[in-house]
Amino acid sequence: MPALLSRNDIPTAAEYEQTRDQYRRQILVQKQPRRVLVGTNCSVHFENREIMRYQVLEMLRAEGTFANSDAIEDELHAYNPLITQPGTLCATLMFEYPTEDERQ
Image 1 (cartoon, one colour):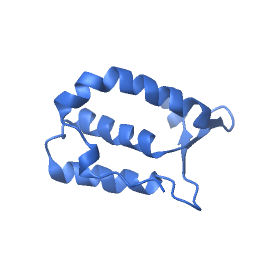
Image 2 (spheres, helix red, strand yellow):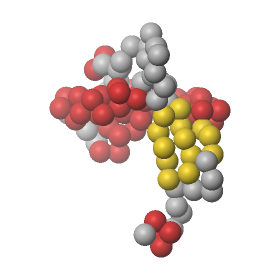
Image 3 (cartoon, one colour):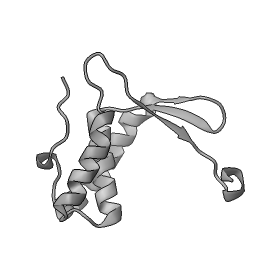
Image 4 (spheres, helix red, strand yellow):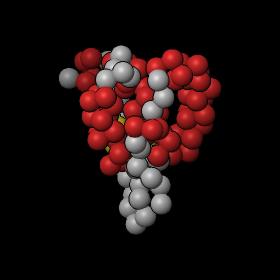
């Protein structure tokens, strides 16, 4: 059974920056076969634990909150439910429109 993410799965910002490029490439390879197109502007992404870990790390990086324990817990709380457990299936439905006019 895939374990949920915990604080122990989160490196420091400096540690993440050292491995980010390679880790990002690995995640993109994992994500490709897990993406199903549903029309022109819609796709379904079937998630896994490592992809959710990447999402948490990228959010902490974008927000500059690696050192904030509350922010880390908030991200873990948001992304852990998307880690598929036995007997479940989790996916993210993405609507993607390239221009502001299309999004409106």
